Each structure stands twice: as C-alpha cells, then as structure tokens.
Image 1 (cartoon, rainbow, N blue to C red):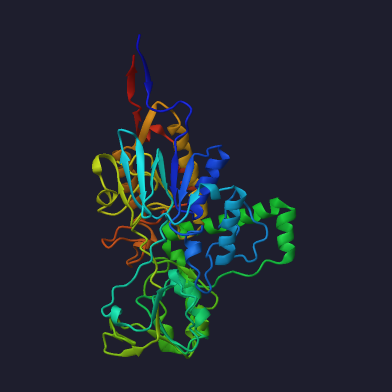
Image 2 (cartoon, rainbow, N blue to C red; image 1 turned 90 degrees about the horizontal axis):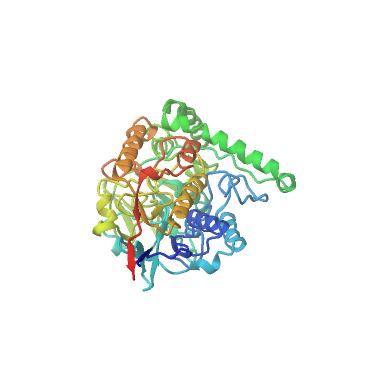
Length: 501
C-alpha cells in the first residue's frame, strides 16, 4: 500500500527573513512575535537598529509628522517631549520596542544583503549577505524603505577637491564646521533642517540650489508636563489626540490628490512669511518656487527663512560646472572657494530594494521586471517573485500623513499571507500578473489628477517621468483595501506530492 506526503513538515512553521530594522522591519517582527511565530531572522546592514533614524544624525534632524502618529498604534508613548519628534527620541523609541519585544536574539547585525533568489522547486528564498552568510527562507520580507540609499550628484572634478565632503545622511560629526567656508548642495527636506543649525557656526555658507522648496511653518512646540501626565494617566486622552491628528492630516489628501488649488493657501502663507523674514529681495526671489505647491515635497520649518536672511548665507542658482581643489565653479565661471561640501541631495527613492540583486521564478530579475518603473500589487507583491512581501514599496509613500500607519496596514496584509503559507499543502503564492498590471494601471490613472503631475520633476518620479512612489488617496482607503487577503489574486502552487512505499 502507498501513501503520499508533501515535502513540508506538518508542524514546522515557515522560516521568514526580514531585511531591515526600520519601522517596517521592526513592526513586522513584533507582529510575528505577537502571533507566536519565532521562526524569523532580521538582517541589518549596520551595527544597530533604526533605519533612516539611525543613519540621519545631522544637526536638527526631526520628523515632519506628529510624534503620536509617527509611532506604532499598538505601542503608544505618552512622554514625547515635542509635538514633532527629534531624531534621537525617535531612535530611542525604536530601540525601546526592540527591547520590549525581545527582538535582539533575532537580529543579525552588519549583514548587508547582496542577493536573494527563489527556487520554485524547493519553494525557498536563498539570501546571501556581503559578509558571506547564506540563509534560506520560505518567506522574504523586504523592509529597506525608500530613503536608505543616499543620492550623490555627478560633478566633474570632485575627486580633485582637497577639502571635506560628506552627505547629510552620512554626517561627519568629527569635522568641525566652525568658521569654515561651507557649500551645501541641495535644498531638500534634510537641508531645510540642518542649514539653520550650521549657518551661525560657519564663516560663509554657499547654498547651491537647483530648485526652490515651498516651506511653511511647523506647528511644533514642547509638550508640557501636564500634557505628558494626562497622556500617561488617561490613555484615552492619548488615543483621542492621535485620532485628532490623524483626521486633520487625512483631510489634506484631497488637496494633494484631487483639488490642488486648495494648496494655494500654503503658497500665500510661504510668500508672506518669506517677505517678512528675508530683507534682500533678490535672495527672497531665489528661494520662492516657480511650480505649484505640492508638486514636490511640501516642507515645514520655523527657522528656514531666518537662516536664508543671514548675511553670511548666499543662495547660488547658477548651474554647477566643475569642482577644483578648493572651489566649486559654476557655469558662469564664478569660483566659489569652500573648505567643505555637504550634499543635501536626498535619496535614490525610486531604486527600490537597491542595490540587492533579487531573482524570482525562472531567473527573472527584479531590475528587469521593473525596467519601466517599479510597481507592485497593493505596493507589496510582485508577480514572478513568490512569497516576497515589500514594506514601503512602490506607490505607498505619502505627502500628507504617517508612513507608520501605512506600514501597519502592510504588515497586517503580510501576516495574512504568512498564515496561509503555514499550510503544509501550499508550496508558494505568486500574485497573478493581470491583477498586478490592472492594479498598477489604476494607480497611475489616479496619479494623473494629482498635484504631483503639475509639471515639475521630483524624487517621486523615475527619469522617464513615472511616479513610482506616492499613494494617490486616503490612508484609510489603503487600510481597507489591504484589510482582507483575497486568494483569487494569487496563483497558489500546491506542494509536490512524493510517493512512499
């Protein structure tokens, strides 16, 4: 008599590998722990946790989403010191979560992933790290985020510069900027924060600007002791405050995605404040954008215009030509002598999962699948790459609310998939190609009516102009969409049956 069995143990849980210890990776790990699943490993390229909040330690680094919303819903913190958290406090919060949920034993530090490839016969991902380690996993969770690879401009002659050079996301705290002539290249979200912190320390600051940014006031202040006591003593007050923040922010989605004219109120506000704060009309004109509000990232700061007004700060809008041993030379021939160059040029946000080499079914490489721009079903799953779940993937970025909220929705969806993969009779699940393409077409169609398509270039887009980053809707609609797994969206490959005498 013959009986059959599959190649999975009926009792062994599928092993899971998570890449990254930012909010996405830690959130995923915590939910696995809460579900009683301990068969997971977290690979972290650095020597500590925190993701972007570990890497970005530049002066003034802070969040532009309110602290109570930029934290896990299941792990409230009643004693935030400010309405908008500073980098050290956010990182401390994340480290506290690691300790509370005993995640250290699951983390392998200094393990940057080099490649991941899927074997459809074994239904396993093989993950290789630059340190030489090799792991196998039934499910692979990428939580590398969109803001992890610094973008460096290509400027002729950079290798001839004799001074100090570093990126804001790799700030060199050992270098003393006091009385130095400093060049800052870029006026993005990071520069908006660190320029006001260093302008009074340096002797001269040359701010090289390719395009100006719309900057509006930041409604920030320290929490009072009474407020902290109230949040701790009456948790319902903390939850009500978080809810108020959420719905206030959520209302702005309409302006970004459908009714861009509503953002003109921010335009008028920025122009009014700039006129009041900046005495030099020439300098003022340079830092007022010529594109609609929201087309690029809308920034918030209370000291940006004051910094621009400083006499030792010069805004340079001429294009860069080349760099010499002690100067940056613009195309008009002007030599700007500097001791140090700081890049505030942001990140390679559209290069999802880079620089890892990810290979799916039949040798399909993710770079090839995404040759026309990254896309994923519900921002998480890519056809041809079974049992791979991407957190903070294509078209899940926000312009109006907290990415932590989106990440929690994605983690819940991934958890549903992982529970399905516990079935010993299931080999793997692969999102159907037509479901992915139909979904992506709908997303791109909705983006067409958003302010992000108002005519400017931004880090939201690829070189060809495809918006691969932003979610064109409400966050609650995304949460509802990802709330229930529909197995009809997937090809479910049964485990092979082996014959035994």
